[in-house]
Image 1: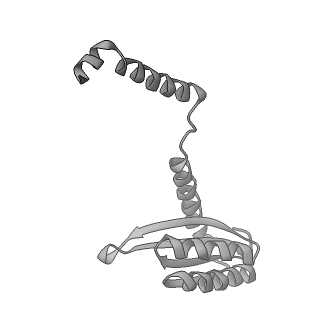
Image 2 (image 1 turned 45 degrees about the horizontal axis):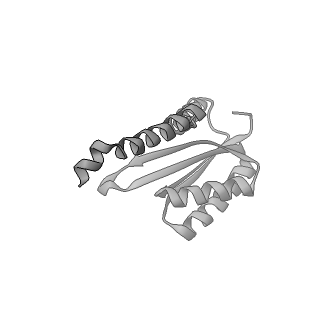
Image 3 (image 1 turned 180 degrees about the vertical axis):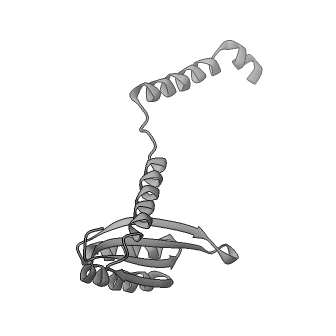
Length: 141
């Protein structure tokens, strides 16, 4: 992390408040999302922690805006800004970034190719052709 940077964390119950928090935080200041962590906790409650980084004042403003937005649509468990974190915290931030990258790559599904669409259409045509054969017509009668 750059000298003078900060790490901001917003933890909420569920994805909707987390998405609202992240949206508001990114719009409020010059910060970047460095990670999103989902944890299933006590009573099967899913908490989502959004991590953002940037300059100290920007992160503080972003976290404040994110907490307000998330509180409007759900429950915020906690929030915190770590100004000028120790250099070892960079390891944590890199872990967040790695998890974010892996999660986004897992979620990406390839678009169906034109060949796949054609073969599905051909299968449907084959099935309707088979259904109209005299054998099947005789069975129906």
